[in-house]
Amino acid sequence: MLLWYVSYGSNLNSARFGCYLYGGRPDGARRVYPGCRDRTPPARTEPAWLAGAVYFACESPTWTGGIAFLDTSVTTTAAARAYLISAGQFADVVAQEMRREPDGDLDLTEVLDTGRQRLGDGRYETLVQVGAMAGHPMLTFTAPWSMSDVDGRRPAPAYLRMIGRGLVEAHGWDAGRAASYLVALSGVRGAWTAEDIVTLLSR
Image (cartoon, rainbow, N blue to C red; front, side):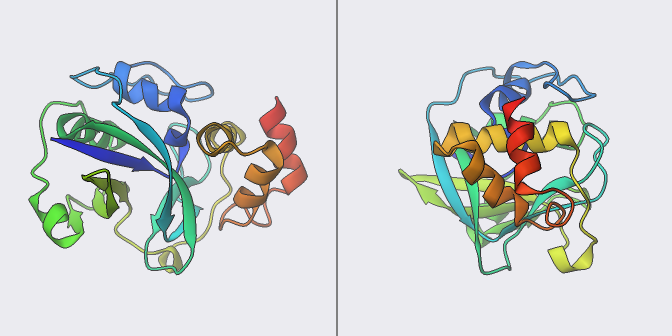
């Protein structure tokens, strides 16, 4: 089964997502990823927009600083990127997000039937169906809580750079437009300026 894995965070950047697929350590990260059992490249990659808001909270053991989450209850839109991959690859990406070895498939029946599926209490163990494209479901994952339940947290420079460059790459934006989008997000707003983000993306 093929599905669209939709990223709104650092996996907007194809090189960073490649570490989930093929293994490796993303630039600026503290962790080496084992990669998927099936290392077939995505069949397609498309820019996307999601209903909801991206926000930064908690503390990343990989990047330090806040982590990107999606709150689908908020009536706004979030820039994203969709990768057409197998259901097995998606399961392996979810496992690696939760710092587990990729060693088994997921039963996606619930999320495909109801739009939401909670695998556990972990930060990225809530699966969400965010639409469909070209006959394939679009799935992402986020936290089980909502944005109003947690305090915003400033993302680390390397993490924010990865996301910003992913926006430029996926949507064809320039650094200024990427900065304008990012600076409005909870956790970034008031902690970074648009000018600082433009400088960050130029490094």
